[in-house]
Image 1 (cartoon, rainbow, N blue to C red):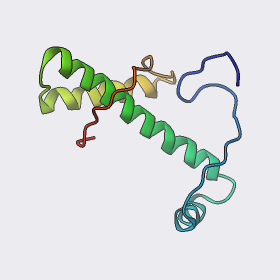
Image 2: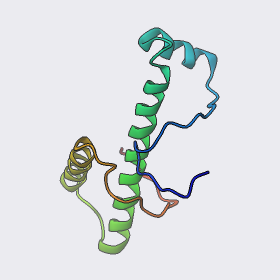
Image 3: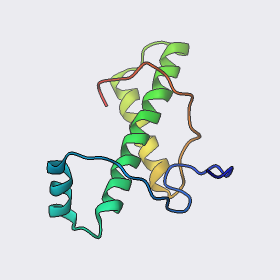
Image 4: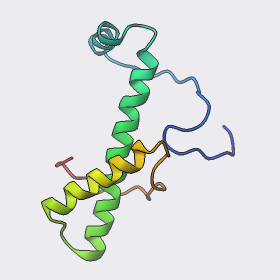
Length: 104
């Protein structure tokens, strides 16, 4: 493993071997084709990581400042989407937290 640190969606490709149920793998192949399989998984994982990162930031904010309204939650989602859409890796990674939100 390299000492270089990359943000979400950055760095050279590295080979991994995820295990998926056959039905899931086949559904992906049918929709995107065999050649786009890895790209599809990459985008899905990036979305999941962004969601979890947002969960971590919101949980930390709530822990320090109190409850966050639905409007503030929506605004935070839009800001995160905008930051990631600008082509960067987005905000720095937060420390992992045990608290997760079911509303994302």
